[in-house]
Structures are given as C-alpha cells and as structure tokens.
Amino acid sequence: MDEYSMENTCMADGSISPLPKNPQVAMAYVPFQQLGSVYPAEKALDAGTLFPELDKPFYGRRGEPR
Image (cartoon, rainbow, N blue to C red; front, side):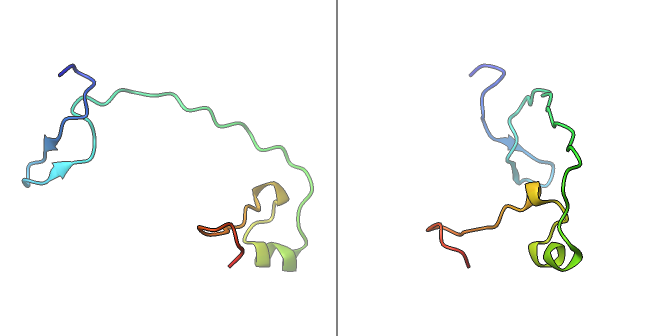
C-alpha cells in the first residue's frame, strides 16, 4: 500500500483509529458572511438563527418537514 492508503492504525489503547495512517494537511475556504437582512427577534428564536441565509431547516429522510 502507498503512504495515502486508508489502512487501519492501532491506537495505544488497542482501538482502531478512523484516521488514515499518514493524514495530509488540507486548506479550507470559508467565505465571509455578508451582513444583509436579519429576522425579527421572534422569528429568529423560532428559526434558530438571526440570519435568513443560514436558515436551513432539516427535512429528514424523505424531504418532509418534521
């Protein structure tokens, strides 16, 4: 196997690590959030966020609201 393979790595306590043997460093890009409109206080509490752009409701497995 090469150095990037996903072979199991044993930890000191005998368990198997979920990480690869030789993990590689990555660079993430996270854009800055632009301040736009905000929800009123009651809507923000209901939605769990002040920002409409971050309001992503969870619809479960079948795409139906819970």
